[in-house]
Image 1: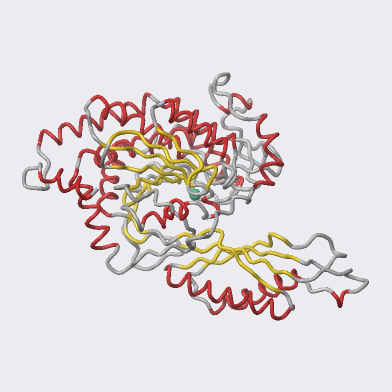
Image 2 (image 1 turned 30 degrees about the horizontal axis):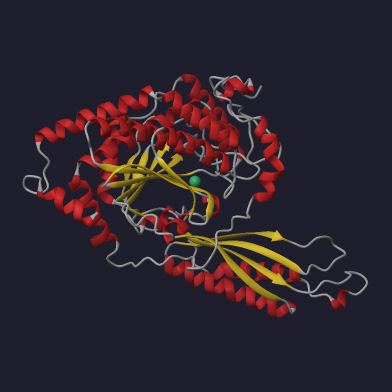
Amino acid sequence: MRIFIALAVAFLPFGTIASAQDSEQITALKAEVTQSVEDNQKMVQEIVDSLFSFSELGFQEYETQHYIGNILEENGFDVTKDVAGLPSGWWATWGNGGPVIALGTDVDGIPKASQKPGVAYKDPLIEGAPGHGEGHNSGMAVLVTAALALQDVMERDNIPGTIVIWPGIAEELLAGKAFFTREGLFNDVDAVLFVHVGSSLAVSWGKARGTGLISVEYTFKGESAHSAGAPWRGKSALDAVELMNAGWNARREHLHPLQRSHYIISDGGDQPNVVPQTASVWYYIREMTAENILENYEKLNKTADGAALMTDTTVSHRVVGGAWPRHYNKPMAEAVNENMNAVGMPDWDETDQVFAKAVQALADTEQKGLDTEVAGVREPSEYPVSGGSDDIGDISWLVPTITLNYPANIGNLGGHNWRNTIAMATPVAHKGSTIGAKVIARTMVDLFMKPELLEASHKYFNDVQLAETTYAPFISATEKPAIEKNVDIMAKFKPQLKELYYDANKYDTYLEQLGITYPTLPE
Ligand SMILES: [Zn+2]
């Protein structure tokens, strides 16, 4: 990578300024790739609708892998499946030499978020089944159509470079990307363009809003006994879980207010008349800095040890995932911003706005409708702002990275909820993803054609971002991905889901296949 940049820069007059001819060529190429995405909107819609219908949870994204893998192979990509210990993962490459630009996006869904698209009241496709209650079904449509637009012009004009497309596996468990980085997959990558569904067209640089986290599951082991016949002979692992949670809930008061932590009891025993010999509790421990995450993690470990001591049980723990707080690249964010402003927002029609307002009414929030202005580039906040995490954080400390938020969902619905599923196989998702693809395609033109942009990105990365921080992943060298997660849920629902997979050969859209009028509003 460094050699490539040094050589490329040496050939430029005055080192950093591209010639007028170059800039004309770049403008023309950008117009061309934008048009190519525009002409490929059918593919955007098919990918969005297909992944929506698969409704796969983390670590179980096999239909997604198969479907996207086929599209990429048909278009000349080398696709390696089952990478970094993640059987549903893949790493797809196309092109020759450097620079290497890696396009990524999350692909997993949310438990119990099944919902009919386009219907503005609760109406699950399959009761209790997973659904795309975040909108991760749309990101691959953005990336694949952007990449295909670039392939055409790169082939024709002999533009050197490699395009990589990779999925964020099990992002909702924050449990995939650190394994990708540990495997060394990003070692030869020059820049990462990550995309995430949102309700606005936006990018940021510097320390991102939100947290990093450690996802960790504690398992207590005790002794079973007849709960009524000989309770004194039992050592309840569930008591230990309850005491651990009580301890942590008291401790919260004395943690920094920006922390977020939450848990579920993943094993609470079998039946009341058997003292639980095993019980497990699964925590996400979030904070603003890696240092503070590790500090709270130590406190949580002590709380677990204390609970074991109180109950004569033993405790072990497993790190399920980890996500470093995110830091995004300034020169790349500025390039994205220029392209966002050139592309503009989707052309929402009155139907889209009526639909969006109905869903916002359903979510009991302000009925603002869909955003109509480009949100643009967000500078780092003066004060830290807490919130969610994405394990793109880990990658952002290895390679200059940005996340493009593209407007494919309705804003302010609460998140991780069936309401967030409603728009994700409708014109809102199709139009918003097309806009995202145009911005990414144009930014790839910048990255492939302007060595000075890559050089500036790496300078920011090395001199500013890494100046005071050294990345060390939260997962150890030997931790294994928790690929057993969600196996049971998918086994239960997959037969029903399969009957509803989108058939693009028969139906123009998934809405048409389901016989849904867009929008279907409450009476
Ligand atoms: Zn997400």
